[in-house]
Length: 262
Image (cartoon, rainbow, N blue to C red):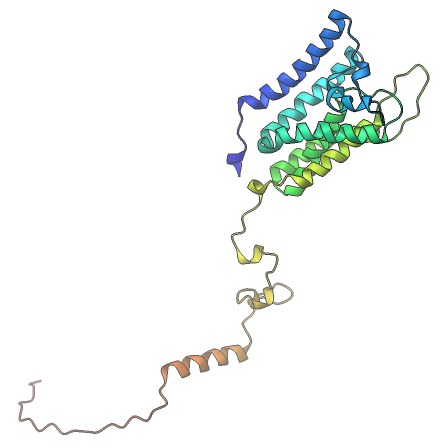
C-alpha cells in the first residue's frame, strides 16, 4: 500500500496555486477598488446562485483571507498526497455542493470565503481515513481532528454581537456535510486490506476449522475427540483393504537346483 503514497510536485503545487490565486483576487479588489462581495452567495435568490462558484474566492479583509490560507495549504496538501485520485473531484464538487447547501439554508446575507471548502476538506480527510481502516490514514484523521477539531463548534448558529463580524455557520455546516457525503461516494479500493488467510474472511467459522478445533473455549490446546480419530482410522482401513477373498496355493520347488552354500 505504501506505493500509493508518492510525493509529487502537485502536493505542493496545487495548494500553493490555489492560495496564491485567492491572494491575487484580493489584490485586484484593493488595487482597482473592486467590491466582489455582491458576487457571493445570497440565499434563495437567482442572482445569489453565482456565489456557489465565486464565493470561495472572495474574502472580506486580509485577516479573513489569512485565516483561511494556512488551513487550505495544509489540508489541500494532505488531500493531494493521500487521495491524489480523488483530490480534484473533492475540491470541485465540494465547492458546488457546499455552496448549494448554503444557498438553501443560509441567512439573508452575502456568504463569502473559502471556509466552506476548508470544512469539506476537513470532513473528507477525517471520515475517509476512518472508513479505510488503514493505519496511516487513521493516524491522519486523528491528526486532523487534533489540530482542527475546534472547527466543529463553528457549524452551529452563534449569537451575533453588535460590532463583531458574524461567521457563516451555514457554509461551515454545508462543507462538513458535503465532505462526509463525498467520503462515502468516492471509494478507495487501493487501500483495502488484502485477505491472505481463511480466518480473516467475515464468513470464517472456527468450529469447522481443523486447527481451531484443537483449542478449547479457554484457549488451551487439546486433542480432537476420539470418535473423530476412530472414524479417520476406519476410512483409512476401508481404503487399503479389499472386500474380495484371496486364496494362496503352495507350489513345491521341483527344480533340482543346488542350494546355496552358507
